[in-house]
Image (cartoon, rainbow, N blue to C red; front, side, top):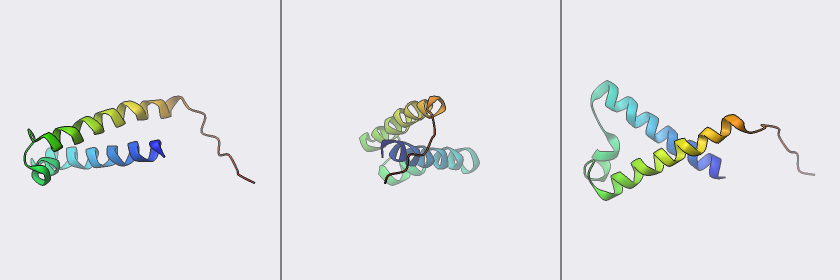
Length: 68
């Protein structure tokens, strides 16, 4: 479950960076009151933590386990 949350946050962060790069529009800052607003900063930090967490996906064995 934690992997899915981290991947979701990375998708949000990736879309936000794409919008910044293409349109110079920061969606997170727009939605939460500017890039210096505390909620925006929390989201930025959560995206960064998610990126660090997802590094571990490179080193995991990706075998599916079937439940009987």
